[in-house]
Length: 333
Image (cartoon, rainbow, N blue to C red; front, side, top):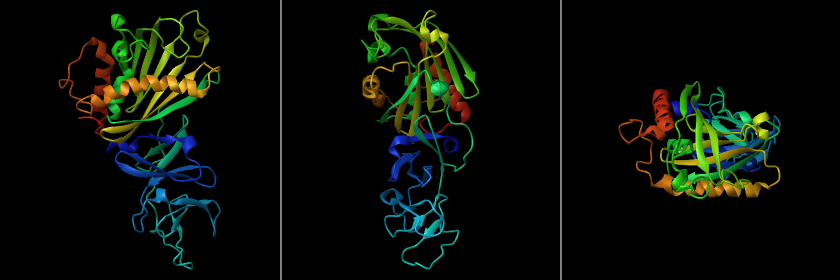
């Protein structure tokens, strides 16, 4: 399964503090926890002793041997170090657990305000890119999580789609009488696809918009379940001198027909508080959610003959071919 060799977002970094956190990824129960040095870990949420959920346990200081913190099982108190090795069995104080007494572990990293996990356990490869991350002129914040009863590819396809703006987001991102979509360009990239020259008439493209505008975007799929929207500044705007506001979409495929979604904003708005900016994103996405959950099938058909297409769906068709070429199996049909 190729999906196990990909990095997936599983939680906000800020939510991973003193207690272990249960999450779900690709149908697998996963526990997240921080060790004494602040490093994030992702393990199978199952104690190898009697199968209890490790996420019901606690993170405790080391009481013997090497320093640091350990993850304690809630059932019999077995304590595991950061490498997954059992170091203490309270029922047998003098017992030294053998190397076989080990919890199954995955790989974990942190980036873009999120904890990422890779189920094959290999700490290798690049995470989905977000070019705006390093631009200090732009403010970064995360919105979500949003739990959606639809497949991750359906969410990515919706993110790439401009022709729904005038209907799903009428009065916000579009209008029915201005629903026409100009032609745009799509090309394959080493990490996915890139759509450029994407233009749409919008009454309020951002929380700061004071008048309607014909806005240009680029859309890039940076991994099977990740994408980035970049707002192309007008020639005379401040943004044309360097920075470009953007939004990244990061999706955790919890199961084939269910996912958890985060958006990461890179915005030039330093005046409004985070709650206001997040509320605007909440409004937009919660307009999408019921429509996404209504789609049948919930998984995305990769056979282009399974659904109808027009020139306005060019990015979507490229995305489906990209997933098929990769051999993606989760969230597609």
